[in-house]
Picture: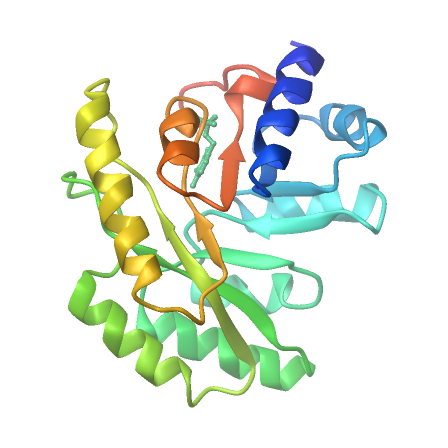
Amino acid sequence: MPVNKEAYHQLKTESDSKAVTLVAVSKTKPVEDILALYELGHRDFGENYVQEMLDKASRLPKDIRWHFIGHLQSNKIKLIVPFVQLIHGVDSLKLLKAIDKEGNKQGRVIDCLLQVHIADEETKFGFDETELQEAINEAAGLENIRIKGLMGMASFTDDFKKVRKEFRRLKELFDAYPNLQTLSMGMSSDYRIALEEGTTMLRIGSLLLGERSPQG
Ligand SMILES: *Cc1c(COP(=O)(O)O)cnc(C)c1O
């Protein structure tokens, strides 16, 4: 399916009006789709798989800002450190320290978001409130990472009241740390709620680029 330009322009207008950054999630989609959005002026793209992000980055313009939004394995950190714009889903102290170490080795300071567990589902990664405080304290001592903010994913449900409640809780946590600038919350199905609840960064895939195959 081609890029949905109409959806793009609408999303862009809605995000811009609230100074929200729109990240186009391009996982499993071909470089042609990314280029189509690039030609409309878009620069922020999100990928979930390291190898896929590397392949795409090597074939696409260098001024694209690559956001890593997947579950990052320690042994792959070194591959994205040279160019990644922002790592969204840092969900353990161990991972945070490993990113810092690799950043130090490669002489870069890596911007990270800490993932907070806001959904009911067992399967979603992230810190709880206590762990979050701990991670933020620890991070203050690490020189090659910078905690820019928080990221969260709401429960996968069409109960929008529930989604709103989860986003609201994440926003409250975010507000409790005035030094943080970025709140990454909201996907295709729930971005309007996220906008209403004070997101600063949306991660939008299917609405812009069409549905993915089930494993994507
Ligand atoms: C795939 C993905 C998205 C985009 O999901 P859509 O529902 O297609 O908008 C956003 N965030 C994360 C972490 C993802 O893995």
